[in-house]
Image (cartoon, rainbow, N blue to C red; front, side, top):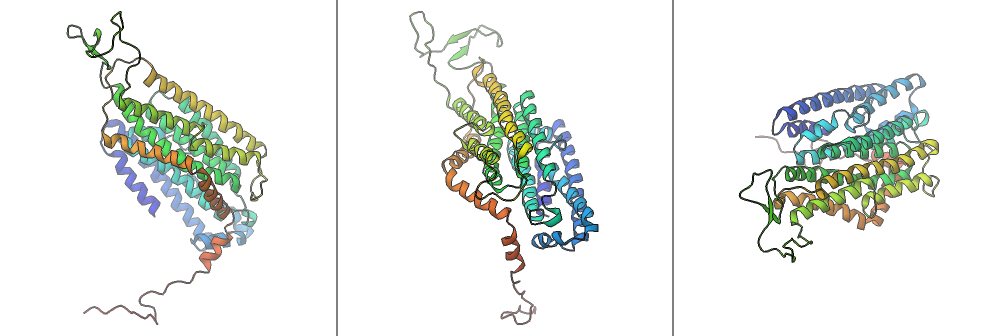
Amino acid sequence: VFFEIMLAASYGLLLHGSGRQRVQAGLHYIAINLAASSLFLVGVSMLYGITGTLNMADLAQIIPLVAPADRGLLHAAAAILATAFLIKAAVWPLNFWLVPAYSAATAPVGALFALMTKVGVYTILRLWTLLFSSEAGASALFGSLWLIGGGMVTMAFGAVGMLGSQRLTHLAGFAAILSSGTLLAAAGFGQNLLTAGLLYYLPSSTLAVSALFLTADLIDRWRNDGASYAPFEKSDNAPFLNAELVPTEGLNLDEDEEVLIGRVIPAAAALLGLAFIVCTLVITGLPPLSGFVGKFAMLSALLNPLGLTASAGTQPGAPGWTLFVLMIATGLLALIALTRVGIRHFWSTHVRVAPQLRVLEGLPIAVLLALCVALTVMAGPLMQFTQATADALHSPGTYIRAVMQAQPIPGPTTPGNAHPPKEAP
């Protein structure tokens, strides 16, 4: 219910500001998400019809006991339910709507939508590890290979999309797809060592993509802002586009009356440049920031699947090596794409004014990137926390017992209540 309430709010956020492109992308977004919501209701109804409950802990207990004749119907219900969440998690080929919708939205909305994509990933991880864990009997690890394969294809699609993107907002949208595919593929193995790494990687990649959406909007505005760049100014007797650039007063000149090298970088331009560099490092998984720590943890788990605390999931084998290569290759492609865009927007010679930023525009970007740095500084304690979380996810018995053994709190009208409600006058 709360998932659908969040989606209902996102419809209004995407359409905010009107415009033909935004309305068109918004209607497509609404249509595909309503279809996903319909699949969700169908899957939940089938699941309830088979098991007679929607209590998650109770479901985990009943699924191993489902009759063999109903096992196929159970798997069909789970597949329909998973399809609904995979649409929201932007798996290929169900992610055709994401880049047009996210790039058409306003920058703050695009940053929020980067979080919504990860909500779909979280839901799949939470339900799959509970309902189809290694303790689920004949349904143990159902759909594992589909998650791994779909995630890896999504990674390749996102990386190639980033490489072919010409607009910054499209680049950010494909970066969201790439990170989502990485998380889905890693989750499909059902290994708690791998899950611990992806749980650390999830917030850092989300924060970086959100910051990239905000930064892209400011860079686009700066790029189309003017036709002169400090410390030069337009000559009064020349046309605007063919203006003769002459040094402004107060600059240090050499003996040939040429401007000395070493011009001061405007603070706003420096902020945008640093923000873009940090986003690049986190998204591509380069050291020393949190993206590298998360990817390194996942790669280490793939190389050492039989660690001391490893759970009984799908052994990496050929799919594990494929994911290992894909994580490195897609990071390289993302680095090429982001570096090319950075050169075009920051290093190439542009005749334009310095960017004008308000504090309220730069502050959210600084906060998001500061959180990425904080994740890096606190990597040790956070990895311990994510490892404990992954262990609990892949050993759901403790959760099931805690829920099923909990005693219900008596309501106000229950006999024997010490404080019954007062009667209305």
